[in-house]
Image (cartoon, rainbow, N blue to C red):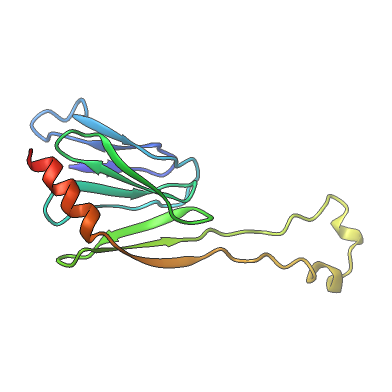
Length: 142
């Protein structure tokens, strides 16, 4: 069983026969209340997770070691998911951004407040991992 919580920098791996102590943990940056998802490859060989710093992290589930780190997005990489049978995965990014207005914002007119747009940094990416996953599978089988 794998679990990851909000404001938790680790994804925990549990053995349900002894659930008092996790078997392993997988590091990621997650210090906000935003949900950051993870997924397990359909073969069961790898775990993939997003990270608050925009990276996508791959972990080998046999050795519990990080095998790949991809700087994928300019904002929080909050969603990742493997395709069920093709060598692709999808990742998404985005977070709410609010304009910073000084303490004396009462003095700003309504029109002036509307002049502080915040550019969204939301994105969706589809990644091909055919070569990389084959190499990772070969390493896992050794």
